[in-house]
Every structure is written in structure tokens, then in C-alpha cells.
Image 1 (cartoon, chains in turn blue, purple):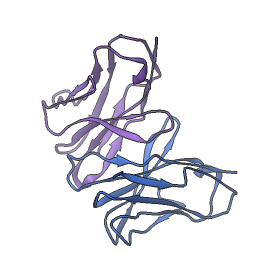
Image 2: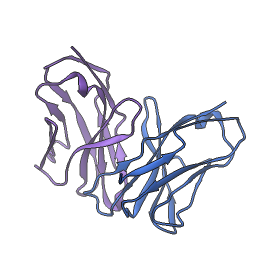
Image 3: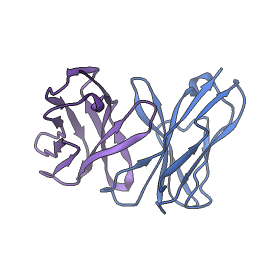
Image 4: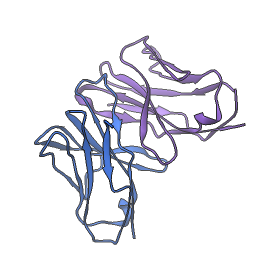
Length: 113
Length: 111
């Protein structure tokens, strides 16, 4: 089925560990983003990409890295996990053009202990 | 700058009641406006959208009208069902595909 696929769905990390959250879309969307969702704070943009080879920081980029080597994939790397990074992470994609809505993945629930 | 403010929840309604969730926005230029819905344990799904002033978005019995004069995009439904229980997010998209989300409003519909 066409859409945005995120893996894993759940993850528990120890403080200081690193990991990569995977995101792939098969809709040939140019624009991809990573958000974190925390209670009472809505969605906050971490990083985004307007196309392969181009990435930029969002509202809360510290502690995260991204790359966009292909149109389909946009992985999010946690460099050294901290308890403050406990959250639900969503990847989303859209075509260029502000009239199109985002398509969201089903999320990764990350707990850092 | 760009921002979205939506009414705080949680909202609890009886089945068949009328629903309004308020959303106002601040934006430069002419943004597109969206409502997303998030069911428990799932990602956000696009519910409806409007791309210019006075447009009305509608889907699954939900409606919202883009009011530029009041900078609002309130979500309404005439008769809610238990299956409408979810968290609803108002959002805007401006130049450069940046999306700005409200903090979400939790709706619980009781039989």
C-alpha cells in the first residue's frame, strides 16, 4: 500500500545509546519531515528535507541528525539518547505546493531510560 | 510569524451532539488550512483542507470554513458518533511547505 512506513514501532534505549529511526515513502513526494509529539505540546518539527540531498533544521533539531540520499528515504539519527528524547516520532511527506496535506507514518514510540 | 491556536480540551460529548472545535491562526500571506485527526495509537490523517478564503472543506460529516476576516478555521460536525473519538489538530501551511500545528484537542464521545 502506498504511504509512509516507519520502523521500528517501539524502541527502548539506554541513555547515551544511538539509533536510527527509519522512514520510507513510495509516493515520490519531494518534501519529508520529522516531528516529535509530546503531551500538551502538539507536533514540533525536528528536521525537514525539500528533496534528495537537501535537509534543514526545524524547531527542535538538537540531538538529531538526518540525511536524504534518495527521494524515498529520510532516516532520523539520535546521536546520544537522552531521557528528554522520550517521545513519539512521526515522519511525514507531501508534494511541493502548500495546498497538499501531509501523509503521516504510524509513528515510533521511543523511551529513553 | 505563523502559528495556530486551537481550543483546549478535553472535550466530552454525548452521541449525536453538535461539535465545534475552535481554531484561529496567524500567518503571513495566504496559507492553506487543514484539520487532521489522530486515532489512538495511530498517525495523523488528513481530515479536510481549504486552500483559499471562503473555501469550505468537508469530509465524513465534518466541515470547516476558511475565514480570512476572523483568521479562523473552526471544525464542526452536526451529530458526533462514538467512532469520532480522537485527537483533532488544526494546521496551516505557508510558503516553503512548512506546516504549523496546533496542540490538538481530544474528543471523547460517550454513548
